[in-house]
Image (tube, rainbow, N blue to C red):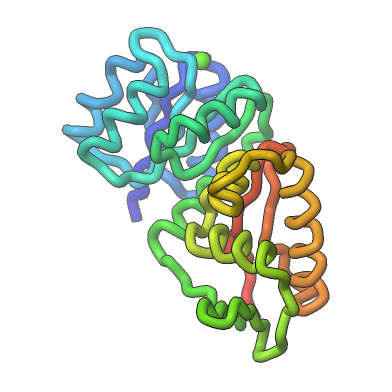
Length: 227
Ligand code: CA
């Protein structure tokens, strides 16, 4: 199994550290340090996943990400130095699959790489977990037990479940839930998500299905282990 992972990172020590961990995890890491090298390299070699730093010499990660999406669906994890950046990046809808903020632990990166690969390669179904969404009745059930969601909670769950692993900012969720008005605050989304998580947790205590990223936004993630 040669799972080639392209690490685009201009700090040589950091690139070497990541490469080391990914190698130990059974991947085949390749490091590039300049944004201009990425596209030609991908065209001639290919990769199962790209770890893409945002600030790069030559060409920045934003441009590179956009260009990759023009010809390839390869999973991309963007790496940024600031958590505030993630919100802006989400708004740009670059087509990245996940975001990691510096500083990070290499172990966390390996876990995220595996998670992204799992969901992009395997694409499990929520029904396998026991979760069912009935769009006509706005009713969500877990193993046939009604979760008793409000309409807003149901809508939030559906948006997240329809895009496993995709991180939505609060603003994006608000736009989808309340398309006509922007009078609601970010906190409104937080409080609906909190209630939704509580109901999911009551029905399925062994799973954490809705994840938040540094308070930037939320995503639905398939659990690592299923019984
Ligand atoms: Ca950099």
